[in-house]
Amino acid sequence: MTSTKLTNAWYFLCRVFFQHDNAPRHKSTSTASFLKDLNVAILDWSANFPDTNPIEKLWHVIKNKINALGLHNTDELWKEIQII
Image 1 (cartoon, one colour):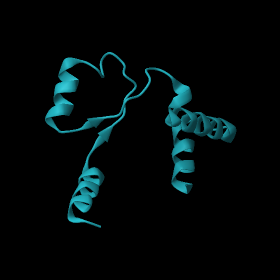
Image 2: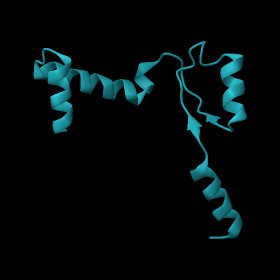
Image 3: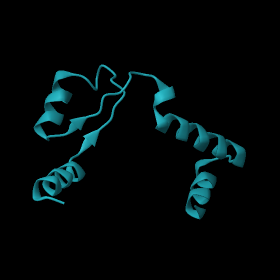
């Protein structure tokens, strides 16, 4: 691997990427300025479109599994989390 390719790969691996749902508060001037000052790259993403957002599918699975446990309070939930 050439020095340039290695440098480019290292830059990409060390770069911070941020994904948000394009909600108005996430696209505000102050937020955009803050992320730009930190040199954070923004990933293009559809606004409020859960079908293309993998975390929404994960949250759905987690909620279903928690509901199936039949827990009654946060103490029971915390005990289950400790087991995991």
